[in-house]
Image 1 (cartoon, rainbow, N blue to C red):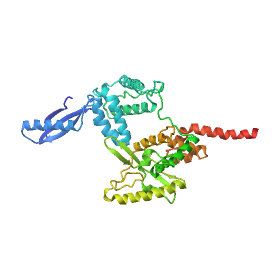
Image 2: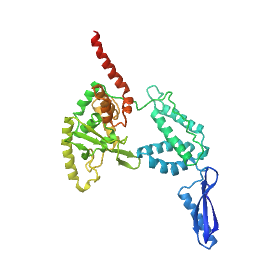
Image 3: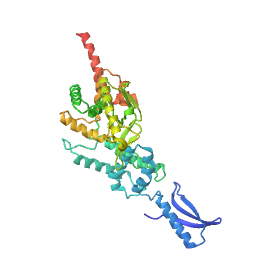
Image 4: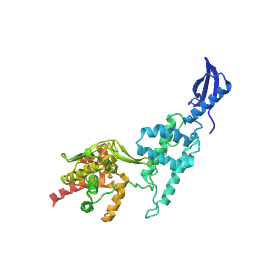
Length: 395
């Protein structure tokens, strides 16, 4: 990369060193200044060179010359994404940009990236995913959720570049999600009533820790990260409730981290039936003994997770999904995602007379409409069953 330009001029009782770090939207130079009082010309030149290196080291770039890659790593990610997005979202966005876009346009000057470049990359992703992720028909295309994540990430890069004056317009602004042929991999699924009964019978045959993990998912409607983050202090045996107020997240190269909020930023206190309460009372007693036995070996001194190893390290949410797969294979249950146990719980409640407001609260949705939208098909079935009761009056 071409070096930044600098100059030295007499100023007051010394010499002023100035380095041009870029240009504003009107084309006027943006400069950083620093004084030197050395009378030796060679020393002043060396100080200027050091000043230029200092400006380059802290990532000052001429806006119209900066490459896509440099902007991503030195501006967008550390100064915007890491500060404004949840760690897991920040990691996802960076992964998308690193794997999907930097190999193609990383060395291109930001101002020279055209909309067609991005369109071609996304089309190439779609074709590649279609051939590498075969379904029964051999034509499984990129999912809608993946398309949304890709577009959100790339639009964020260029939107930030425009706002910060690096470029004049956003080449990704008018791009839209291509819905034709796309699939929604995150389509909700759930067990019907017979499958649900089989699941509940299977749970009873499992060790107590897995029984409780399953009940928190199926009865309380908790997410994997919320279950992993539950602490003994969050259990109220007297009131038969569990409070979900934090989440365990997994970050590449950083391991697991406690995030002091749920996915939607809403703490929820959920009631559970008496048989679950009795199991919790028994299990908590054994967990308290485990901590006493561990003594100084206890690793998470500020936490006492309900589910952890012998020295207090919490479970990874991904380990719950892996254990779930082994569980359903062992009991010959139809495969659904661990996350779909939330949908099974909500569907069971709605079809057994629970209000949408109650389900919203138990699932931790931010608003009533979210619950209505997700379970519109269930509510339609409930409504039809209610209407059919009037058939009795017409017999």
